[in-house]
Length: 320
Image (tube, rainbow, N blue to C red; front, side):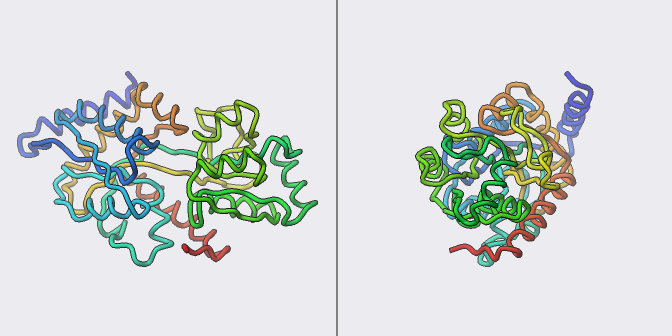
């Protein structure tokens, strides 16, 4: 056990032993705004399973789906601020929806408090196996030789994959045709079939196709390489600047939750993210387990929004 983890567990133990705190006094509810069985849900359940051992109370994972995460987020925003109802949040609710949807029924800054940043999933750039580009440099050269002739698939307009593709296009100085799909699976299928030449997608659905030789992984979008595919370089190290586009996940609580409760939750969440078994589950879902203070999580979310806002402003992206 590392020193940092020991300190976190000691802090959690001291907080929970304080008679004045008496938290938690009943099972917790962790709301996931996406369907059961998906990557976000699997990671949330891994975190919850470890956290409940440290907190001494069960954690029920509740899937409240719909409206790209809005329904789940709204439910938690309206919950009592006592630390017993939490949201397993993703980049969509933290950074993308607030920028693209002026009609959101919640405000990420006004209605929530950050607890901990727990994981990061890269967007991967892959090309169809028939494209004569073995690396990103060759891809850029090919695109410059054939302006507008190459198309890239994303999981839809205004998604993280779309914004990543547009940022790459801008920084590479190339013309690409964007082809939005309703989700990752049909986008991968058409990339494998050669209907589109490039794809920006999550790692999990792309990696098996790459291992089978049907797609070619060229780069990941995060600041550091991912443990799930350590041989794949980052766009930053390939010369595209401070390229850091990731689907981050973490836990937030309703605003007004007492600071001592947030500290207890943060310690339990960080201990869960540091657990080797939890880390293995994250890697299996194409993600890297992280950990943070609430302040670091807030800074990260704000930096994401700033980065996304620049891409949206430069491209004029709007939700349909």
